[in-house]
Every structure is written in C-alpha cells, then in structure tokens.
Amino acid sequence: HPDGRYATTIIGKPIIDHELNIYLASADGLRKFTSSGELVWSWQVSGLSAQRQVPNNPAIMGGLVYECLTSGEVFALSMETGQLVWEVTVSASGIGGDTAFITAHNGMVILDVDPPEPLAVPQK
Image (tube, rainbow, N blue to C red; front, side, top):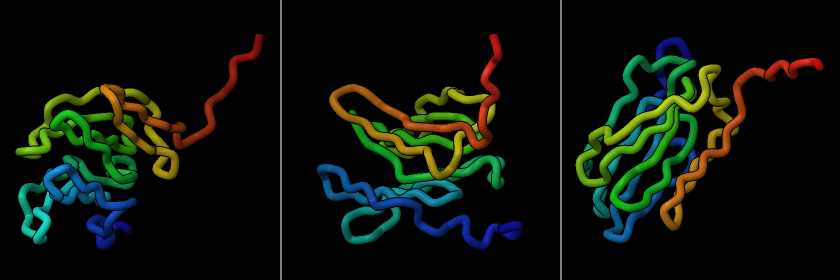
C-alpha cells in the first residue's frame, strides 16, 4: 500500500526460542517480545518499499535471527540485541515475496527463493 498502512501486519508465524521469547516479522522489520508480551527490541528495514521489505517469518539458530528482504539480501541479527551481525546479497534481481522461505538447523541456513520475475534462459 502506498501509505504503508499494512507494513506492520504480522507475516508468517511467530518463532519461539528456548526461553519462550517471541519473534515476529512484518513487512517493515522484526520484533522480539518476552513471553509476557513486552517488546525487547525492534529492527526496522531501511528504505522500506514494495521492492524492499521482509517477505516471511524468520528462523533462529545459534543466537542469531535469520531473515531476507525482497530486494535480495539475507541477513542475521543478534537474538539478544536485534543488532545486524551480517548481511549478504544473494540475488541482484530480488527475491519473490511468496517464495522467500528461510530455515536454520544443525549449523546450516537454507533460503528457498525464486526471483520476482522469470529469468531468461540463454539459448545455445
């Protein structure tokens, strides 16, 4: 929406850590709450737009929260502070919002993505 009215609508499902803290994603960023609902931290997408937003729920592992942006970046935040730990661009053409699913398990982070537009297949 041009006015950003829906930017704080929860996306995907809540993620709950071993201390029962709750992590929620919305188009405009990520938020961590205590089990009683108190906000611990909030991380906001810089340059929020239809082409740069959080597309789905995050994953957690090893003290980090993993997520991606529709503009093509994958990043990790500290579970404790919400501060950016690292970020890398994985797709210059972006990540389709309905295909950006991220999971983390046993030391591995997997991101299932598809570009927002079909890619041209080179001809031989």
